[in-house]
Image 1: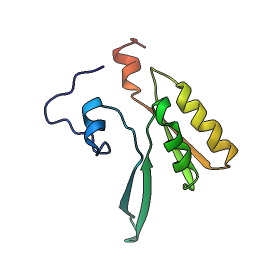
Image 2 (image 1 turned 135 degrees about the horizontal axis):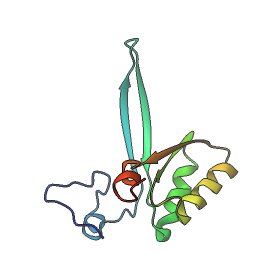
Image 3 (image 1 turned 90 degrees about the vertical axis):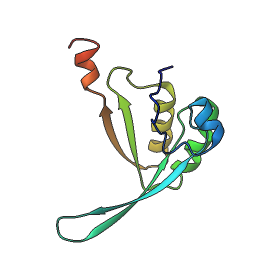
Image 4 (image 1 turned 30 degrees about the vertical axis):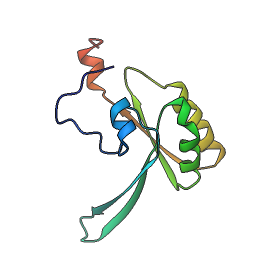
Length: 113
């Protein structure tokens, strides 16, 4: 468990128990307005889902509401069991997938690649 600095916020963990335990237990919806170069704006509705095995039902329920899925994978940690299960469900539901490999800099700093 990593130590958080004072002032670090967990924006999508809105419940007190989530903040205290430092895990996400419920889905957190959010809407973003993204401006385009043409002057047009796009509304993107996102749902941040918990990664804990105990709350996987939240992830599956959110998956049924989505047009697409952005899967974020830590470059050093790799694909975790719950992420793989979520991907399998997304493929079964025929949801569009976008894979993002995050924290690539850790490959350099921690593994010296």
